[in-house]
Figure 1 (cartoon, rainbow, N blue to C red):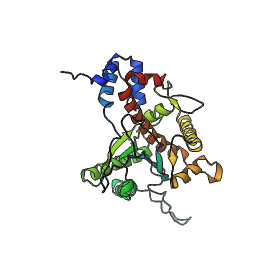
Figure 2 (figure 1 turned 180 degrees about the vertical axis):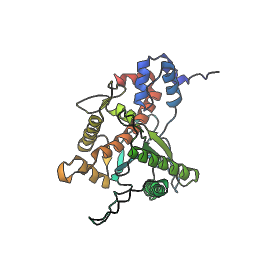
Figure 3 (figure 1 turned 120 degrees about the horizontal axis):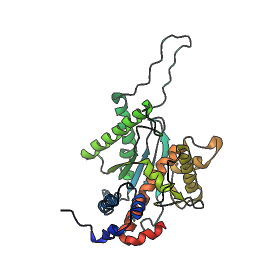
Length: 320
């Protein structure tokens, strides 16, 4: 026998397919499928918070949620850590009474590009860079140990890892470098699963589809504020280069104008380099932008989820 929807969400069954898709996009859920599929997906997902996971300190006080957002790469792995306000979440209160604080924001090379010091006239072929499980397993453990275990007080409660694709731009071929990053992504999940099951780290890990992040921020965008009109997605494929440029501009506005995130410590230095052009600027801004928009999308998805549960059908007015 099919279970009946929760009385507080029964109104979802009265919506049109377009409205259901708008709610799915607003909360980071897949927006494809028939009306019954979308309704079931929302009914099952909306009541469950993916950020309401608070750790206890030795003094017994709740610590605020911290999100570690990782944009995958080998030469250019970017990450940021967001700390939500200590009062979050408070029932009947705005989800974000203060700005999320970016405690860390950086780009690193998991494995630096190898250099081979061979004589110019040498006929000895250069050794191919090793990329095998035995070589990269220690890299995965070292990376996560430094990011989540080095400081217990600021350990993340939620970790987001960008989901990799096997093919790029619809190509029929699978690039070797893509397979390498995919393998390293799997290693990160395996290490985190081990840390959780061994009670070394307590938290939640989620794989995030980049397409849903981009649809949320770069859908039908308000050119003045730079904020996407949630739930309205531009039809047709968006060029990868255009999407990268738009996300860089979006994060640049966040840093320069404020009002979305607050930067602290070394993250503030990264922010300064992000908006600086020329020599003083940081490289690979697209990777730095990706990890930050991914983390903030997760926060906004959770914020929208709570508003939908509390406001009901009235939330649709926000989407226009």
